Image 1: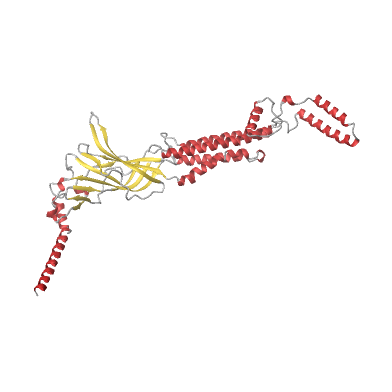
Image 2 (image 1 turned 90 degrees about the horizontal axis):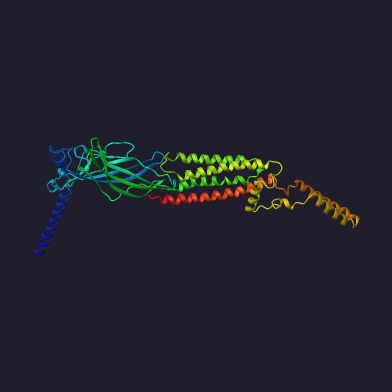
Length: 462
C-alpha cells in the first residue's frame, strides 16, 4: 500500500517538474508587443534621443555588399547595372536596454526616421544619385546597442571598361560608398565581410563573377582657403569575365570565314566575269562586320580593340585584293606579250618557281632561239636526205618537216603561244600566286589574332 502511494507521489512530482519547465520555456520565448513598444518609447522615441546627433565622437560603421543579380554591363555606355542590398552595422549606446527586465526581448524594430543613420552615397552612381535611404523598411535594433540597416538597391554605376580583348575580355567594376556629410574624424567606414556576399547570386548568361575585393580608402576634398576635408570611402570591386560561347558562334566564326574568302577571289576564273564582283562583295561584307563590332564598343581612345584592329587590317587586305584583281583583269585582256627583259617577266618567272608552275614558255631564253637562216638550212638538209627514199616516204616526211619548219618560223616571229610569255599567261600565273600568298597571310593573321585574344583576355591583369 505504501509502495502504491509512493509511486503516485513520484508521478505527481515529475508532472509538476514538467509543467514548471514548460512554463519557464514559454516565458523565455514569449513576445509582448507592449514590451516592444515600451522599449521603443524608452530608447529612440524618448525625448532625450536626437536622431540627428551621432552616437559617439567617432562612430564606426561596418558596410557589406550583397549581390543578387547582374542586369547588364553596357560596354558602349560603360555602365554596370545590378541588384542587391547593402548591410550597415554600428553601435548606438542610447538604444541599450536590459532584456531580463523586458521579457528577454533581444531585438526590436523601428522606422528609419526615428534613429540616427550615417549619410552615405554611391559615389560613382549614374542614376538615383543621392543619399542611400529606405524609408519604407524598418531598422533592426539589438539590446546590446547594435543597429542593423539593410537597404535594397538597384546599382547603376560607372565602369571603366577595357575593350582590348573583346569578346574574350574581363572587366573590373566597383561600387564606391562614400560618407557624404561626416568626415573620417566623425564616421569611420569599415568592411563587414572580407569579400562581397554572393550566396544569393543568380547566374548571368553573359557574365560570370570570378572574384571580389573590398578596399578601404579615403576621399580628400580641398576647399577654398586651404581647408582640407577627408571623407571615409569603401570600394566593392567585382571582377567579371565574359562567357564566349555565343560570341564564338556569332562573331568570331563569321569574321574568320569572311577573311578567308578574300583569298578565294584569285581562284575564280578570270574569264568568268564574276571575279571583280566577288571581291567587292567580300569587301562590303567585311565593312558591315566592322561596323557591327564598332557599334557594340564604346567610342573611347583609352584602349584599342584587337578585334577592331584585325578587321581594319583584313579590310585593307581586301582593298589590296580589289586592286590586284583589277590589274590581273587588265593584263588578261591585253594583246601581245611584254618585253623579255622587263620587270613583269622577272616577277612572273619568280612567282612561277614559287608555286611550281610548269610551262615551256617560262624556260625559253632569248639566246636559245635560232635564226630563220639556220632553221631553213637545217630543214633543207633534212629534206635532201629524206628525198632518197621511196615516194610515199618522201611525201610524208617532207610534209612533216615543212610543218616543223613553219612552226619554227612562227616561233621566231613570236606568234607561238606555247613558247612565248603572253599577258594572258602572266595574268594566270600572278593570279595563282596571289591566291597562295593571300591564303598564307590570312591563315597566319587569323591564328595570331585568335591566340592573342584568347590568351590576352585570360591574362590581362584583372
